[in-house]
Length: 299
Image (cartoon, rainbow, N blue to C red):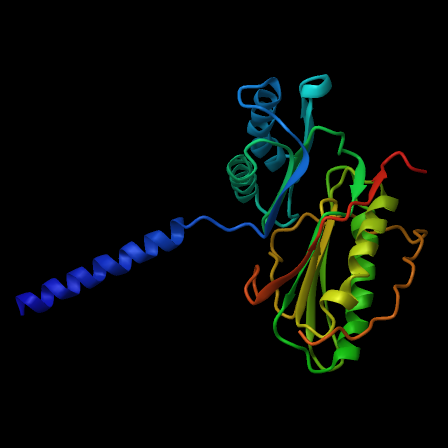
């Protein structure tokens, strides 16, 4: 009996240890890039400015609807940064995600002047060039759910309308939030949940343009899949057959006025070659370093 008691105690300790390790295991980023736009040296003014700026981002982003864009320094030592949390992310989780992002970039991009990292809850990027108020669709990547839908055409038609409506709604947001979520149920009782978001420093037109480019990649990445997402520096969207966002906590962009112009129809959806909550069941399939930059001052 004593030996049985000791074995049970050891088993309990092992189980508790595993639980603690699981809880404390850091979240992995969706992706990151250290861009070859120049390097800085250790103990330089640029490094000092970067650290100063990064230290200010977590608290500022968490109290500004999850968005904060700022700069620090002057001339060639000036650093520009943007921090963005997903619109349904609570302040504490937002702060934690931005903090983890800054710490991770310091490790994986130790001397690059420009870098970007994406987590499921947030994005952080910095550069020695101006990035606030510009739309940048590259670099981007996509991911898709490994499971297929049964009625592809019906699913894609409903998805197209849902994403068009969400794009219009998010683009109509203000300078603090361009974010929207919704769901639609198909005739076959299949529910599609979707989320779209732009960095709110973009104009309505640039946000619409960015999300339009992202959605046009569906034929390449995600047709026939139960879920998919396209992620870029300035915008992203995601859809799934299961709810993946927090329906109880979301700061929606305002509904567009009746006079708002309707979004342009997308290109016809074509079938791609054969190929959860959060990122479960999703596979990253593509990444491109293609850059397309539009100034927020463009008329």
